[in-house]
Amino acid sequence: MLAARPLVVVIDSHLEERDQIAAALEPHYRVRDYADVEEAHVRMSGKDPAVLVVDERNRRRSRGELVHSLRNRFRQVPIVLCGTQVDVDDGADVALIKPFRRSQLVNAISSLTNRRIEGSWQDLPNPHPATLRRTLETFNGLGELLATGEELAYQQVVETCDPLVDAVTDSQYKLLLAGIRGHDNLAYVHSLRVATMLALFGYHIGLREEPLLILATGGLLHDIGKMSLNQDIIDKPGPLTAEEKAVVRQHVDGTIEYLRDHSDVPKGVITIASQHHERLDGSGYPKGLRGKHLNDLARMSAIVDVFAALTEERRHRPARSPEATFAMMTTEMQGSLDQRLLKMFRDLLLDAGAASWATA
Image 1 (tube, rainbow, N blue to C red):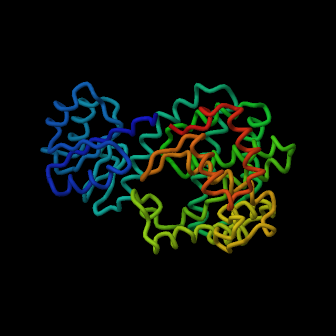
Image 2 (cartoon, rainbow, N blue to C red):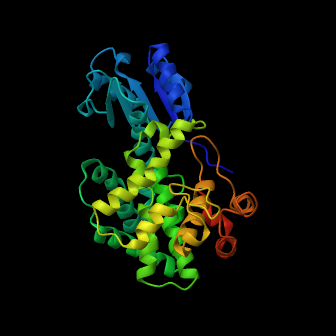
Image 3 (cartoon, one colour):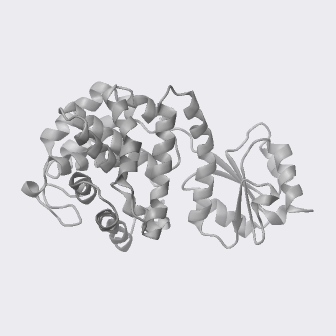
């Protein structure tokens, strides 16, 4: 069963704008909206939301007094304050200056809802809290590197993934996967799961040390080109148009271009990034490569990426169970995925316990 999505309460005295914000958030969160603070407090009595989104026009006095009133009524609930002149100095956790993009609002709420999950990492045994914090920090920093064209320090990525590989070889990876369950940074969750599963797959077939680091770092970096795309398209709650699909497919070229021009990453990492969407029957992208042109590394990364994507809850669909995913991969995708490697991967994951691979 999927975990309940975080509840976001929107407080705005202007009905039209309140409806617009609620409509923008509903694909991602459960939403309740109210005209004023008093109504929200009465209706939400005993049911603290994950985040409050409040328009500054609800204030009768200063913005600081508005936030103080909200703190008294909703205790420790994070607050996103929206307006034309708002500032975090007003006491809110996040201040969004109007007009703002939908993606800015979603990203702000995502960072706030993740605080609880990230705070729970401290309860994990060492070195897992540090491993999760560092992988998240490294992953989030990739977006800025792409935007500025600054060179990626690949050795830092290796050092980030080294404890992840240790967790795989010590059979401690389930703690890491449990730690990111429910985390709202979907790109991070996907990349860390791919990195973990690729390293586990490699370990299962007899790879050790450096090859496992290639798999783990390749998994963490394989989708970074998406960070430079329009996030409203990436997070679109419904089906993509043909034009939007073409935009999303550009992430592979963006990833390859950056890794080749701005880093010293090994060839194996480039292969994972460039070929995880290629398929044996030539139906993949970006080059439509066929069977003999895809080595085991490309075939493994394709299998892991598909499995990870289908077993993750997305904005527009629920997650599939591991069993249902493997059924689809062995029937509908029989000609496009390496079935010999897929059987090995399936046996490995199901032997480890299907519940380990759930994201909710």
